[in-house]
Image (tube, rainbow, N blue to C red; front, side):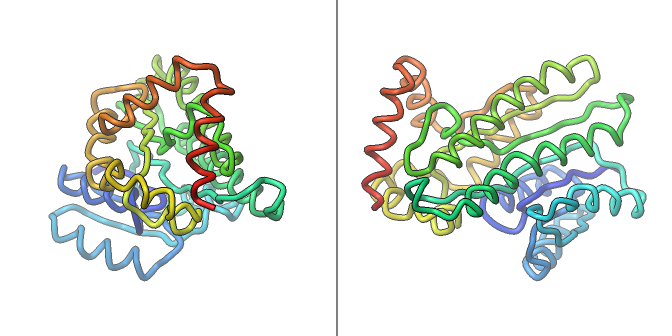
Length: 258
């Protein structure tokens, strides 16, 4: 019996991914900060005839990834898929925010994701196929004024995912970067981007549709998944213009959120 670890599993895209995996008959290990939400979700998903375990952990804690995988070993569970979904961001001018806020975003979006991947890869052998899905963002493809740190961390995640994918090909590991755009979740409320997402609400995707496309891409061994036609077109256009031009355009959009 094998399991899939999903971080940030209690809400938004992470919850939708967990629900989609349960529909596909995958056993789950759910990780998030809220034990109450995890317990409720685990009970709901267990009704789909899959085994669901959960562990409350805050990935902002430096030792959280190791504790998660130590717990997996103690429970004698076998993990063949890692969904690195936990992440967040802040809206606003870089200099106007406490530097501690920026460092938290950097730690969760980059450090914890890297350590989770490392713990996963060094604790399993190459005897069977394994999978890593990193939830990135369309913000990875251009600088994002007013969300400068968030966009930079997502660029890091995309580059890391692509590089790791090439390194792990000979070890039977599939690595995919899921790059959603605006999605129905609590991200905008936490980040402070509700105004701009409200203005462009017709382009906002559901978490369920993002999860479904992301997992389809993972099983098909795609390098990058851009869910939704608008995200595909926008990213294609961004790649055609200089990065400074893309940054100006992004800055104008997010400035409207003020």
